[in-house]
Image (cartoon, rainbow, N blue to C red; front, side, top):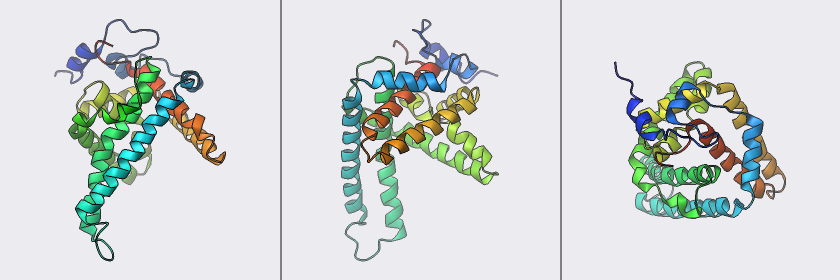
Length: 244
């Protein structure tokens, strides 16, 4: 039986990784080093001089979402309906905003990844992945479905998948993997150090919460740090695309 990852590995592994750059093959095999402290520390170091890029990306993301929300509201009649909108109108409205928002969120994630890899990027990166909207919709649907089923099955499988799938979306846009391949590559790689990634995500959440509690001023540092730290974690596990 052929290995479903054989072709992507051959295409995406550069053969000469720089520093602690991983690859699809190494990630799935667990052949990478991941430390919560080192990842957060590097994210903090790399955020110096890059906060403006992250915040510009977030600003464009929020503006684009506002536009999408307004357009979807008028198309579905949610904003113009007299009284309460119907359930169908609400579902269509949520579907439109979710679908269009996926490539924007992927672009925001890629800003952090590219900074972590030392690549050129800008805030407009959030607008660069609409060509991936179909695989992004599929991977997001499958991810949500499997996590929901996991929570129905005694909760713990759902928590496991929430952590294990953290790299699925960037694998679609960055490594050009199909939805199922991206989900499985992320799951298999993260499972090798699942508790470390759980700890990393909990710490990331606490840092962001602390930023908000500090009269929101702390988010100026906290959000760029976390986006770039996620990029550092991704780089350590999967590296970059073919030719990077």
